[in-house]
Image (cartoon, rainbow, N blue to C red):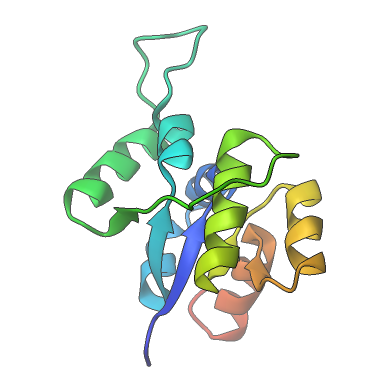
Length: 133
């Protein structure tokens, strides 16, 4: 089966890590992230600036192994935060799937005809494919 190219937004990465489904993602998708998403994922927690979260460490590890590719859009959707705006624009420009969990951005993506997947939808797919019990 050929992998589908997909753009990941910050919310999908963080929640996907928390529910332990990110490892399955790379079976199905070639994953791209805009620089704005990379910055959001790796940003230190202002309350605990020395803390490194597991989702940050996993991002660095996969990026170092070239499993995550940074790619930027030519422009951003102005009505969203930096990561959402860049991910939406890149998915639209390239015709790639969008991996996102923020409801407002998800709705906008689908209204513009983008194929979008949330973490709960991904979990259902994995269950139906007998990858999760």
